Image (cartoon, rainbow, N blue to C red):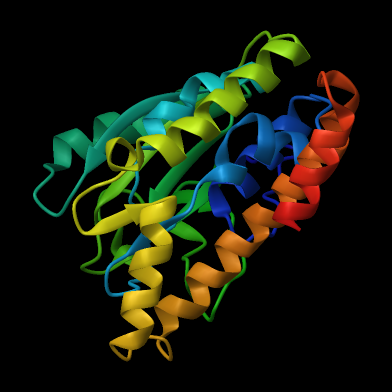
Length: 257
């Protein structure tokens, strides 16, 4: 079975691509700018001290869960699994995923990339492949073995529930509070080897000076974070009429563009 009409948007920021797919599936009216901006993701900037490509994934995304729910979709964490997870643990998780899908509820996983789980058959789950490079990320997950993941199993699963969205003013205020927190208290949003907000710029500059600028990680960080910055610019344009000073919104939009 597959959930009809469920597709993951081909964004570099695969969390947003998966959520875009879920919002569209549930019939929630939200532009891409609102998705990135109101969720707070437009303002995230997290860079490893050696420009590892993990920067877009290794930060405290739990803090944006309430902001995501403001849009009308709530993520339910179903667990973290690794090579030591037992067959019984995997089987129980697989049964929960099938139950959610049977109820018409999208699910998603995070193992290197965020992927919507589109459905399942007799052998395993069918997953979206955002921006695939060859067979990565894999488009299937075989029951029990999860063999498509190879040795790289550090995987989280989520169910995506439809919920009542917040009013627009609440979404805007909470997203801007989050943006300010990223700048004023960056260390509370990421771990020791990474830098958030102003610390991210320092990590990037130091890493480039140390010779890491030509690596894959620099390119991928640039792809994801430039996408977020572009959406931030669009967000401020979109919400200008809701702010006390539309002129300030225009200046912010130009600053992010």
